[in-house]
Amino acid sequence: ERFTIVPSWESYNKEVDDELCIELDPGMAFGTGDHPTTSMCLKAIETFVKPTDSVIDVGTGSGILSIASHLLGVQRIKALDIDEMAVNVAKENFKKNHCDDAIEAVPGNLLKNENEKFNIVIANILAHIIEEMIEDAYNTLFEEGYFITSGIIEEKYEEIESHMKRVGFNIISVEHDNGWVCIVGQKVSD
Image (tube, rainbow, N blue to C red):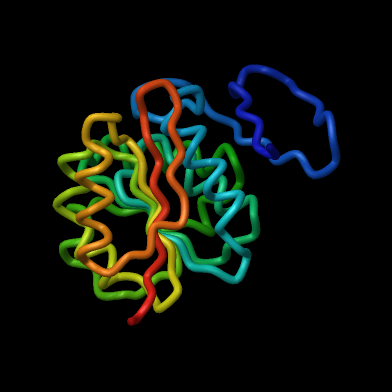
């Protein structure tokens, strides 16, 4: 509803006051905003992320979801990608969006070495990789925290959803768009 993706060579005037613009060069890393998984994640971020939350963005790609979180007022954001080049692309995009000081961008392999806890874990990556990190996502979240995940094809989503339930997530939302699925789970204790 509120995010607008603007290629950095375009000049653009906001149409409404609460519009949030993300300046991006569609380029080397995944995440230009027009893919269904990206737009579903942006919607989920709008719905579930509050300014008081801390966010870790796993497989950040272009950094678009971290920038979106920053625009919503989130103070603590960590962006990870296993691909060093993606981390550099993300850093460039953070500079363009004047939030490079606000977001920690580092190479990292999923959540394997993550000791800090976060309110929100975002992962817009492939289903088989999400599969590997569901337990870690649960353990990285504070109580009541949300796991926002997409990059899941229709054929895989029931498997991912039931795995999330087994680990202890309450499934809050499942969105479908053009053969892709975005799942939001909340960490709740029994």
